[in-house]
Length: 213
Length: 230
Image: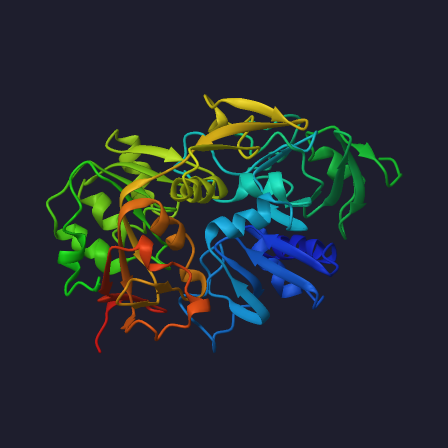
């Protein structure tokens, strides 16, 4: 499973070409810093920091954390600010890319990532703000749930995060984009086949890569 | 004018049953642990707590929750303390879940004399249900009311005796906003200095917002919460 998530994070990192200000959500996006090579990608975290550096066991300060409450470090040029300022950056359209972990994505690009009915999950954090305010939203998700059911659905069955559509979804099997309310398959992940993607995807999508099953 | 209180007990004596209390912090970082510890010793109930989280299970505000002193919690992320969901499920706690940016802005508005504002965040979702809506420039928004408290309990790094505050790293978070949005503001700090010893340009919260300052006795370390020993 970790491998699967790492592969998704690695692919998502390739989308991040600087100069960019990027906010990484909790879940799979927290693995992305391990694969970021571009010095001009500046990480923003909604608890009030721009210029987040990777975890370093030699440099732990309990008052420097990211939104997942993990210890992080300072990059050169770092700044700190309060929560209203941090969300002014997000809601005001100053953050270039948000990478979110999600539970479900529908065929029009709406996502669900903050609640599961009947479960003790009561938290929205900054997800609704990020999807409204970031210029581009990339979602990362394992293609299917543990029971094999598809997470790319005709319609989300969990409560949606926004009426806005996301721009891209990256799974362990494929990469899709959303254009004018339609879902397009643009890439297969290494080792995945079109047949497998079709079998494990409930959402209707347009095949932009060619090939038949 | 000297706002320094000798004990945390004296600083939080203003808290009464039924109050709305704004409590700073993101998780335990920037959380006023000493003032919260004092609340565990006080005979108060029916509190409405406005805070991003309700601490962790049995830690920070999580302690107050287990004591049954909280009637309602307003925040953005309660998943990090499973006791919150359980108390809510058992009908012992009211919850108002708010997107984090909306929570911050509602507090900012509360402090700035702005009674309400519009935002697209939460429009069309379960968290936008029942809210007034309006379309601006082709984009649907919900109306959000400001948030204010009777008391704010906040955490800063340094204070001078007038009540000017500076913060430290990501421990700043909601604290400066809450300092502006309550009738009575208590700040817990690592160090108290004389007026003139803080660099004026570094002061984030000016003294006019602050009523009481007290030295932190409980601090957060990489290993967890512990009592401070000089």
